[in-house]
Image 1 (cartoon, rainbow, N blue to C red):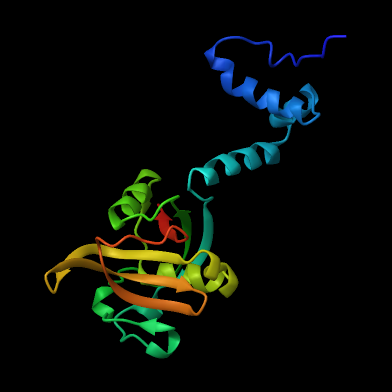
Image 2 (image 1 turned 135 degrees about the horizontal axis):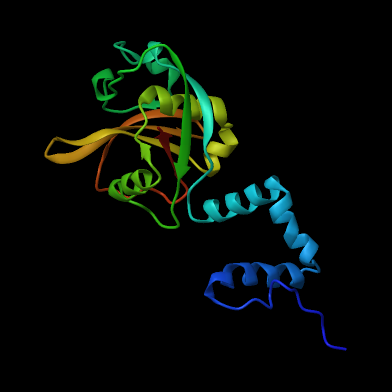
Length: 202
């Protein structure tokens, strides 16, 4: 007896290639057309598929955190709050916002060691802007455990690259297993591919 085929797979034309491919994989796992119809009926299934596809492309889902900007405005850096503070000052982290606001974030990452330019271009491609110090620190401190940050450090690239000591660089906020770091870093250096980069969605 011939093996039953899905009615979805029998469709022809390039418009149906994506659906056909998905249907074939569902049937290979023992599913049927009712399994596929869940995509229409169940929004959570659609979201799971979309999330998987987006994450595989190196772009995370959007999430929200409340950011308190006032502690970061016009005050010297309190080094006791950080695991490490490099050659940076509060002027390297300009802050224009005030008060508390609910902010939408999204993260990007790479399958290779990216440059600043690659990171910024990918952030721009998802409609994101660079975070401020307040925004970067809020994400790192509120959202992730030390173990999670050890596996995938979170990075906020702050402001434009400027020339210092004859080389272009910028300030950044980094979150790793030991805590939050403030650094000045050369813009032409590559980042470890384990890093995830924080952007603000506006």
